[in-house]
Image (cartoon, rainbow, N blue to C red; front, side):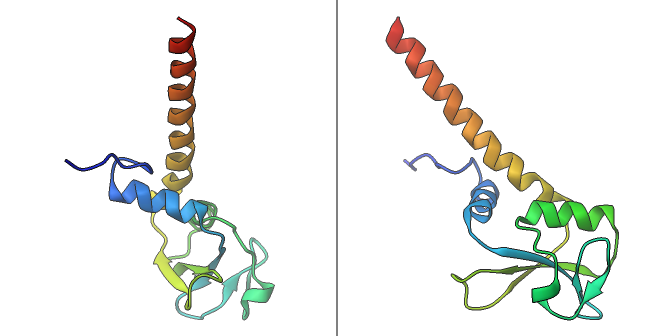
Length: 119
């Protein structure tokens, strides 16, 4: 018998929660030019000048609102030896929801346990 998963019901949900908990810098980069997004202001050559979106869902939302078919998400972390590059896909917007939903479920379970103890 497999033990229950603590970070979601599926591997995709677990990955989403793990991405939310990893401290990283999140950038948008044009795949054709290699330039990084500065927000609505435009594009620059270096990450130091680029906008750090902080989370993949934030970068995804921005990229979908400001469509550019050549945009990718670049993740950097001190824990990773290299950058991680992922495509901009609408499903990334749901990662924060998975994390929040996990906390809501935990809170409901804790409250139910409290009510059961009071009975």
